[in-house]
Length: 269
Image (cartoon, rainbow, N blue to C red):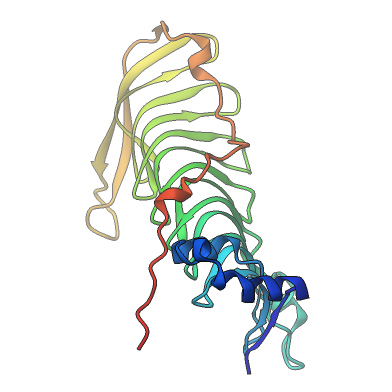
């Protein structure tokens, strides 16, 4: 059984009944009521134990600000507590439009990962930061739930960073900045340097060269390659020190243009 509780003051109920009689209010589009309806705050408990606390629209869909929680599983008597001890509630807290995550919100995953940023149609889309359970952090642009565009990825274990342009979830061009300040500047393939590029040290030296893929002769599978570095003689770099700065995470996200978000009313049967 689905339980739904409306949080509504008696005065609000009187106001709702009175508004339709006002000719000015009657002339306003339906989308107006989706945002200012004074009785849209609800608490819903679903049959599987999930809960939603927040705003809904006239179609009874999540719309506005709200928090959806899927509780962590409870260990059965025959199961080890360790099997579920590391799992946490799966929570989304943020903006919704017509039942979908849309706008800016936070997602807390059962394995401890978390994402804060922009959403579109239930997936990360726009600017956002994702922190992995192992301490790695990606901060930058997303497209349809995948890293795409400008972004930085920092490895929590050693502090190195991949900074540059991402395509379909992997870095394509940019810098691999080591914790000591040295960096690789060039292209990437499968997260590794490839092709022409340069190694630049924090002391200002540069070695241009090329990473070349070479097939392994005795590999168990066909097409397995090794990377071979072919470098020129080191020389003094003409790149300014400021260009080698490590990336910083975005503390503020761009505002969402809500005027472009149009609610679609479903036709009544």
